[in-house]
Length: 243
Ligand SMILES: [Zn+2]
Ligand SMILES: [Zn+2]
Image 1 (cartoon, protein in one colour):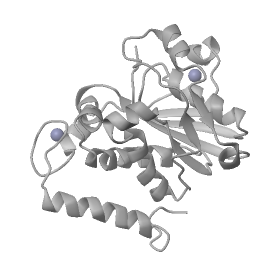
Image 2 (image 1 turned 60 degrees about the horizontal axis):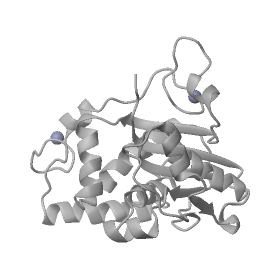
Image 3 (image 1 turned 120 degrees about the horizontal axis):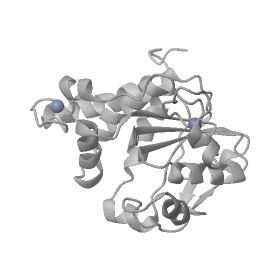
């Protein structure tokens, strides 16, 4: 099945057309370097450090020379697979920052293209796409959930149903930015709830913009599996890699 099959890709074509039209009305500048005319230029794209090579099947981290993944052995990892597009640095970091904190929502469409590419590199079979949800307060403050804005066009492009409600954050959590691993795990513990009627028996793809330790997305996977999901996979645009 190709995503370029014209008949079934119609909603996605409309979605892309909408953003192309807006770019024509309001010419953008590159979120990575400021060059005018495009939202994301080829130089900035070329500078992204893709996470490739020999990766762990489950957590998606580059494997050391020995085959066993130290990250997966270390702690309870619930996702059946996790992949990140690029390292969280340089222009990719700028573009995510601008999407999240400067209300430049057009960049979600730009970033979704990277995740479509990444999803097509996996052999995952998924029946439902969900974003990592924000809490009600954070959602109201920001006005949108950037993960949802990235997940929705991805779902349209790969023709998998999307739900913004199947997975919910049931309590507010503090920002993970300044927390260590054990504090992050504690901060997000039991923060999510999934709707059994939407996820039972399904293979669910969870989408987020950035991940550091994976504590949040792993906790999402826990809630989804508790609600009966058969499998849970994760895709993130950028990922911090400490090596
Ligand atoms: Zn650029
Ligand atoms: Zn691993």
